[in-house]
Length: 210
Length: 210
DNA sequence: TAGATTGTTAATCGATTAACAATC
DNA sequence: TAGATTGTTAATCGATTAACAATC
Image (cartoon, rainbow over all chains, first blue to last red):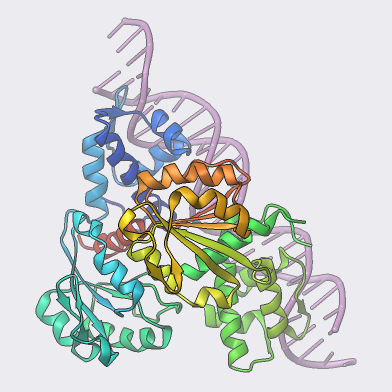
């Protein structure tokens, strides 16, 4: 149903479509045309139609797109109809913040465990879960059907733990550490480099200065 | 010195160059060629030279690039030689995590205040700062030379506060809320949509499934 | 049927890569 | 000088936009 090798740039637009369709659904809209959606989202109607057509025709000539159906389909494309079990590695501020962020559960992402190697944190309670030692990660992944690991630790630790994760054959790594992880192709990595993002903002602020 | 209208895609690569050059500097490397850097970074040497040349020639034929000099120059392009004063709006888990993240200070980004509208949080201490009420944002920005606001609150609140920020003529907004903010052109917005990022990871995991 | 809007092909635009002359 | 490597132009590739026939 879906082409192999959808380009990165198309993929990166899908969550935004999904968000807007969710809003439209909440507003009670039943159908929407690419033209109307393009106005709301500030992109061309052409791009919207091209993007959707990578995954097969979701619309109907003369009518447009059924909001509910399109929302569901994009959700499926994004794998949101599947359940995901996560562990968070690194129980610092960011790790705790993500552990406490309930909204991910609505989309099927469940935090099953939190790990750290700092002795003082082991056993601490975060949202009803006891922080475990990083030495136990491998066993935990195997016994608990974990498919995503969230890395919220300093870069040295991240590189190290990454090897363990590769051993466990984890499906995905959501990487908040400021390193580019070196993993085999079968393992999917999505990076969130916060400092990179802040630097981009800084660039934009000064761009038109002189 | 720098072209107006550098394309977004070039800008988004700058922080990564900066990171790698920082590492090289720490390793004590004095010079590096585009070819060598390309191997490390997994991009083409051609792209590296093209990217750098948007900002003028940083290298020397037959020699390559001086690591320290290049590092400094890219830092300047990114505005990291300037001081930035931030406020964090939304004192929840994520806001607190960012407030406590010291590394930003190394790059010249200083958190000067934290705000929330939840009465129970006002006055709470976060890293030596008392959480203030969102009603006081406008005054605080004016009196404290704030140029960046970090939005770590739910989307309804973000849209609302955004109007205040536009009024204050803030330079940049680092937006963690799951909305696309509507601001005039002169105000720079950098979005970090964490759930979008997680969805992309989910997509990749399931992409080659069937 | 007539009008609307998709799906899709073709045209344009921009970004990446290749190639090489300039030059340190 | 000879070798290395940049800066830059030209060629290629891919993504976006425009256009329109297909069709609901």
